[in-house]
Length: 265
Length: 233
Image (tube, rainbow over all chains, first blue to last red; front, side, top):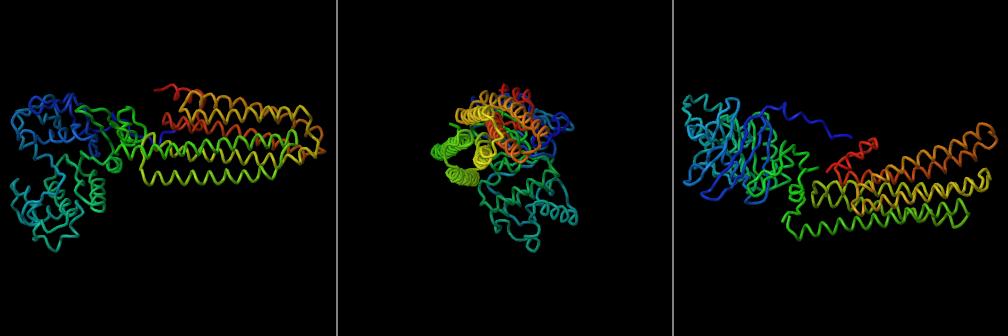
């Protein structure tokens, strides 16, 4: 019996973050039900599922975005390691949480500032003033986002002058500049053409050496291409979680099989 | 994937299934005709060779359809396994057809050399029927998505392999005692070997069916291991 290739034992992999018995409510409506999900360190984990399954809701719990609206309620925990802090604890300041995580959204949303200032922004907020250090960190972030070569001669141009794909890579550079422990992507390529999508996917693949990544995607093939792990969600529940190879080739649950083969609904 | 697109895809998969059924029927017919030529000197070797070209064409057509489906639909899970396996199933049937052609080619020499007695011919006819039944059952396990039937095919093929070895043993013993007609006796061995390989293609086909249904690659696995995969949900 030949397994395609031996994968490391899951128990031996370090975990960066972990949802434990996570419930989430938009007012009276329960959007997440008893989610238990490990996010492995320096791996890409993809969340897939039909619209309304709760994957974006889940992602947004990590940086406490739901706190912005009254009536939203969390139950359970999201633990961030190695310090084992519960991100959802009321004693934990959401601003503190967001200092440790970065998020990239569906549509590129650069600030109406220069390319340089977009990336420097988070560093300035954190109190970094030294010009040389700022420049170094901005350059490094732009390099990590595979954008530096395209913009190095026009760092003072307005970010809005960049193409859609470049703007999204700028947003990734901005997210990386603050050296997050966990990078959250919410459908980062759904507004981009196939070429720009390709470069973002390549980037996500390369970035996992530096940072743990959680990505929500509507595009199943994208999940298959970029992720190490895949979680399939439906109606607020986690249906299946496993190595992407297994989920796409030999899913354990019939519901997962139906979704990824398009028999869903 | 929209329901319409999914339905189109299902139709494409059905078409592959129909092509496999067509190939299977043809391969089996080839084996029967080659056997009739060998055992009873019935039929025409040329016709068998011509029909084999048809099997070759069908294999190419199925492979081509599989490649296009992968390119256009980017299949996953069962769909992907089905397409990969169908391509291999077509190859098993094509090769079973090659063995039938080989038997047809040897038939005249074997009959002319008169080294085989009536019981050997009877044994070959019996073997051929069982090999054909094996192919039929393997194809049925594919058509009906029945892993239990596939497992039974694999089991029977291993029994047939032992029987083929016994037939060969008898010929080899004679070659040792009486080496006067080694060339003609080698033809007999080659016939048995071709028959045995036809059954093997049925067995291998059944392994591909288990791969589709269970997602487990059971080539080179023991019967117990295969049975375990089949009984696993």
